[in-house]
Length: 66
Image (cartoon, rainbow, N blue to C red):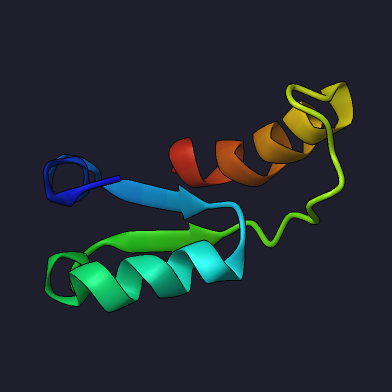
């Protein structure tokens, strides 16, 4: 994710807290008025694991439908 992506986004989701910390360290000013959610997802899933996809949908959908 870079500056153009941040400017474009209305809502930003990160998978882990360390991703949020990295974004804040690099783009603090651009993130000032952005809604950011950390999903705090454990890193033990395989790519496109159905359980992981379900977790993301459950976490993200409420924020996108309001």
